[in-house]
Length: 188
Image (tube, rainbow, N blue to C red):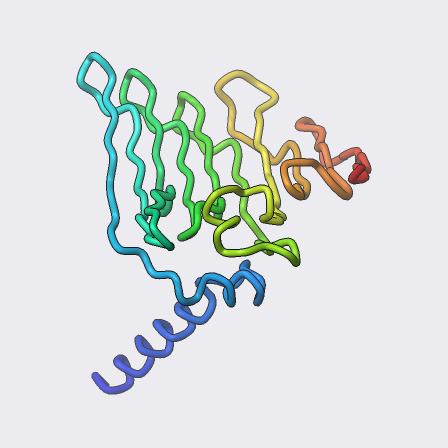
């Protein structure tokens, strides 16, 4: 029985390792595969009242004669009352993997998940470390809202982003019934 459990756990660990970079393109993986972090840092900022304002994690890379401190991992932002209102997870090179936003009732009202991370053809590792202008990112957003104050949240809007702009079909739902309208966004 223990051997079967061990095999199942190893299988899940292998699948997790194989899919952990599923949104990264082959080019992105190829250009970054040999660059390994030399350190990691956690920074905590506090309000004047002593409560935590922000917790951020960074990876430090050395490339050439320079070191680069890049936000990576989970970042959390809190309000002055200590409530979590914003949680973001970044990949090893500062690319958004997911973003969650919470209202003052601690309800998740917005989530963005990255579906694809790629690089422009001419991008070098130096450019990747110094700017995000050469990175191509696609993500999917779902936003929730309520038709009554303090009510349960329902899906209100959903659609796709490409490099910070809405693209494709975005649905806006009527919170009172099952109808929705579609708006088409074309990248200009």
